[in-house]
Amino acid sequence: MSQVEESVEVDVPVTTAYNQWTQFEEFPEFMEGVERIEQRTDTLTHWVTRIDGVRREFDAEITEQIPDERVAWTTVGGEVRQAGVVTFHRIDDRTTKVMLQLDHDPEGLAETVGDKLGFVKRQAVGDLKRFKKFIESRGGAETGAWRGEV
Image 1 (cartoon, rainbow, N blue to C red):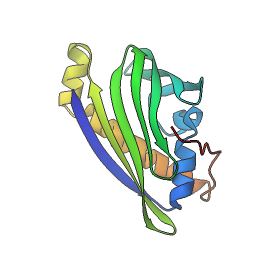
Image 2: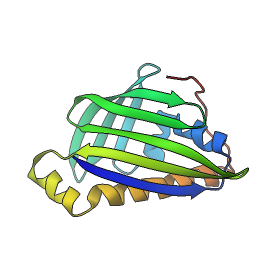
Image 3: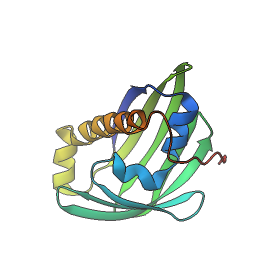
Image 4: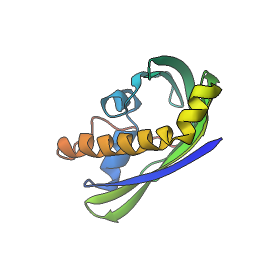
């Protein structure tokens, strides 16, 4: 199991950053390799990804969700094994630190080699930078919000 820990500062209030992160179906806008996410229930999402020509489908269950603080998940079926948490830290009224911690279990030789070469880490860094650009380019207006607690 490999671990990735990365963060980015976004120029929006913590509530805005958190609200946008709860809009899972919007993830393909800023997550490279994510083709589609379907929100099936308040706590279950279905993912379709394509990375380096390899298509994968899996479900992820939200295991903890606290508004303006954290969203945690784990995969519960399919071709990917991972768990993670995204936390939101108020720096000031207009700046938030978004921190990603991800545990990922590469499958097969190609994924293991790619992981050892830092592919997952680079992917996480890129996705966080694209999230920053996505939310800031909207003038700090999120596309929606889910304020429930899990």
